[in-house]
Image: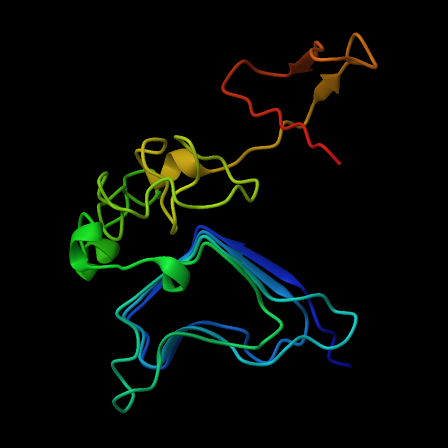
Length: 210
């Protein structure tokens, strides 16, 4: 069948120790959004998006990403953080205005990413590529709609102070819910929103201002 470009959104992902590239558009001609991802020690570029999307297919957008120690598999003076097309939308990525060193991370030990799964099949929490609390990359990002702790999102795949294990990071949508009309409406400056879900628990209710 015919090739159909597909827009993608990638969040809170890690890519490390690839021989060539970390995050790569892989010839996709539609826009790709990468939010809060960490790319570490990939051979040529940690982020490689050199070709602009085809007309009408959006833009490549990179926000709150960390690139560190890329470009080991290239000649001196080339490779490293990112190879990007001129139409990329960039905001608060580490290579734009930050200086990164080993001490920004709790651990750079890649063996921690290969530990055994827990008894229930989930991945255990480790300190691999998690930020040190005193890193300048903490609270340094822009809000992209991902839950964060503190005054602003951290850069990279892991948010400080919220999740203690990967298992807790799963997002669930309730199968049965009811959202009532807010009151008063219109309002200034306050309103009340009542909603119900099938089971009690932590719930995120996000209100967007169009």
